[in-house]
Amino acid sequence: MTFLGVDIGTSGVKALLIDPDGKPLGEASAAAVEPVRPQPGWSEQNPADWWTAMLGAIDKLGHTHPAELAGVKAIGLSGHMHGAVLLDRDDQVLRPCILWNDGRSAAECLELEQALPNLREIAGNIAMPGFTAPKIAWVRKHEPEVFGRIAKVLLPKAYVRLLLTGEHVEDMSDAAGTLWLDVARRDWSDELLAVTGLTRQHMPRLVEGSAVSAQLKPEFAARWGMNGPVLVAGGAGDNAGAACGIGAIRPGEGFVSLGTSGVLFVSNDRFQPNTQGAVHAFCHAVPDTWHQMGVILSATDSLNWLSRVTGQQPAALAGAAQANFSGPGEAIFLPYLSGERTPHNNAAARGAFVGLSQSTEPAQLAQAVMEGVSFAMRDCQRVLADAGTRINRLLAVGGGSRSRLWLTMLATNLDMEISLPEDGDFGGALGAARLALCAAQDADPQAVMTMPPIQTVIAPDKSLSGAYADQYARYRALYPAIEEARQ
Image (cartoon, rainbow, N blue to C red; front, top):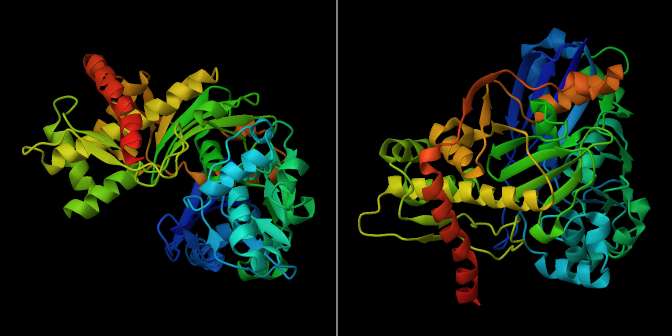
């Protein structure tokens, strides 16, 4: 008996097999065609690309681990959030999916909040261009012929589930990122739907992430040699899926993710919004649990940008910063290359270097980028605290966590220890597989979703605390000053 987790990303799909004890047995991945940007600030992708990549990843497992794949009893899905997959009455895709990092709907966000003054109270979140509902408001205004043909709106992983099972179903954690969910009640809101011209009939059925959502179509079970009925769990949005993979489902447990975007995530036992600070307050993927996130849009993507500008690889830049580090530098970087969510909620915000001189080298620029991302995470921690949230334990995930210097910067700025797990995949694919195990065996998520063994614990560098506090104060002063100058 085995369980399969599938993590659907914009750059590719990863599939992971686990045994009944949660031990990974094998994994495979397949790349997807990269998103396109038809206009500045836009980001779109063909949903068929996720499907092709998912089939490729699972087919690879069929070649490398045929017996384990044949033993699959349940599948879990995690996926990138907020994307708008628009389907007609025949479940045909009407246009490319508008992705999470698309900023075209800023005007529609304002219009939605003006049309429904209690929107934030119901949704527990600010209307941001990244969410799904403003994207539909944009389509309604700018592509009325497409809007008029919409029969269903699905998130990316729900679209993949539809092709796997024939069912329109979504889990609570992903649904919370649409701006159509009454997050406290864990149900669609008729008021939020109506303000975008939709009804419950346009929405998928809701289930908890650890519950059964549907059954795999027989033709796919046959394709992968699976015997008997194969269940499909509700699954999770990507960040909730990562939390399930790393075991952050109990109150106060969290993680800091240094991926393309950056996330400071903490689990809660109740709904705790802070819309004033642009905190994301969502349902978790397990019942009776919620979570909060501070989200920044350009974490390692900021270092990737510097790599393109300098012609040096990101790892080389991070290594040079480590080798030359002697404390906070003169240069300060604002990582708002794609706008920003927490705490500014400003899709039009732009990045900046301040404090450059003739002696500034790529190593100093890299250090400033890493510090700027750390300060942005400190911003997230500040507004989470404003909501009354306390983080008791923090683990590090994402590609940026391979840099010891970056983790030390984070630990010092957040003034708390950060645990680095032993080598292994603790991301969305493992979380999805764990949710599949819970669905198939009616297992308690608290018992299944344990934290991994820890490789090392990064402590704050107290000798740098004062200098970073001063630098952070300068960092915070720069955003309003630059925004005022841009007006």
